[in-house]
Image (cartoon, rainbow, N blue to C red; front, side, top):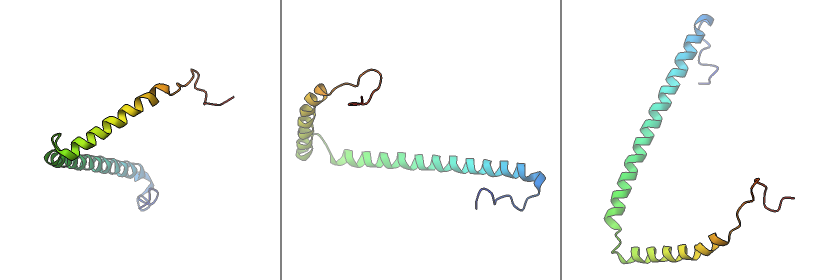
Length: 97
C-alpha cells in the first residue's frame, strides 16, 4: 500500500492521528527488523568463527603456507607505501592546474 493511499477512507479530521499511527507502526517494524537482522548476523558470525577455529590452526601445514605467503606480500608492499606521494595541502587533485 502506498504512503498516500493508506488513509483515503479516514475522515479528514482523523487523518493526522492515522498518519501518526501509520508512521509509528512503520518505525516499530523497522526497529524490529533491524534488531532481528543484527541478531541473526551476530549468531552466524559466531557459528563461522567456531567452525573456522575447529578446522584452522597455526600448526596446520596449509595454514602455515598461507600465512607465509601473506607475510611475503606484506613485506613487498612496504616499499610501495613508502614511495607513494602524499597529497598536497589544499586538497587539489593530482595533475590539476
